[in-house]
Amino acid sequence: MSIQTVTEHTSPSSLLDNRNILVVDDEEPIRRLLGYLLEPHGYQVTLAGESREARQRMEKGAYALVLCDVNMPGESGMDLVRHILVQYPTTAVIMITGLDSPVLANAALDMGAFGYVIKPFEANEVLINVANALRRRKLEIENAMHREHLEEVVRTRTIALQQALEWLERSEKELRLSREETIQRLAIAAEFRDSSTAQHIQRMSHYCELLARRYGLSPERCDLIRTASPMHDIGKIGTPDHVLLKPGKFTPEEYKVITQHTEIGYRILAGSDSELLKVAALIAWTHHERYDGTGYPRGLAGEGIPLEGRITAIADNFDALTTQRVYKPAYEFDHAKDLMLRERGKHFDPDLLDIFFNSMDDIKRIYDQFADPNWFSASRHRPSTQDQNESR
Image 1 (cartoon, rainbow, N blue to C red):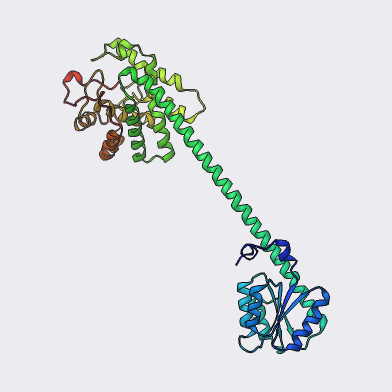
Image 2: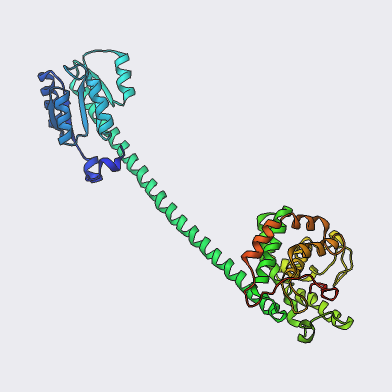
């Protein structure tokens, strides 16, 4: 039982200043003698002749101290003391007995008694034991109250800390969502000129995250790639419409113009201290490099192409092949897979490509989750030779 439970309707000061003493002894002369000794010293003494009467008095009044005989008819003093210590933990107990037994004394003290007085006793011996017991009781109650106060302070501060952490987590989540939405809308602004939709951005970025995760990158890096990859074609803002929207194949001059969007995107995004923009700039610059070194803008090859660029190349090309563009229809998954596997080790990192196509269940789930709206969708069919243009 805690101090808080005991003192629910009692003020701390009244609990600490309590000078009520219950004397329990089956010998009436002993009871009265103890009363005479204690009352002149400011103690309020109540007498009880046996355990049952003592229990009744304990139920009706609050006592700071019980002086209890060991041997009494009926319930023994030791049993009564056990009851008092459990049910009234703020009440101190001193045992009184005619037996000078170290075993009994140790048993009483181990049980929780504050003192052990042997009959016949001296007046000063009783007064010193009572004063010491009440002083110890007061210290224990103060310590318990202080401990409960500290626990309450800890609980209050823990709740406040949890609320602050929850607020920070919500704020961080809102900031992250706001940042991602801003990135997606900026990316859509560039992609929309190429007849793409917001769903392309979502699919491609989740394909990137899936491939990065299956490759074994950390969750933080996977999330960073997912967030940064929508900006891969931000440089298309600087591509003229007559080139960007042209159906069919490019002339050599037009191809040179379209390749510049990687450099433009890099210049837009580079130079920031933000890790997100650093990754986005790297992706914008390298996602059209080819594994065999024949890509653009710098002709990087193999693992000389940053991993983020190799991942985005696969995700972007797969989405381009499986959705309608101004220069091509949407292809079936199996046909898109066949086309890309022909470029294994040439256009695409062979290990990453194998990992990607070993995740077809997840790829289809992402495709269905971020499907294009009906007004944009077109039926898929096998292409003619002229349709097989490179993803832009």
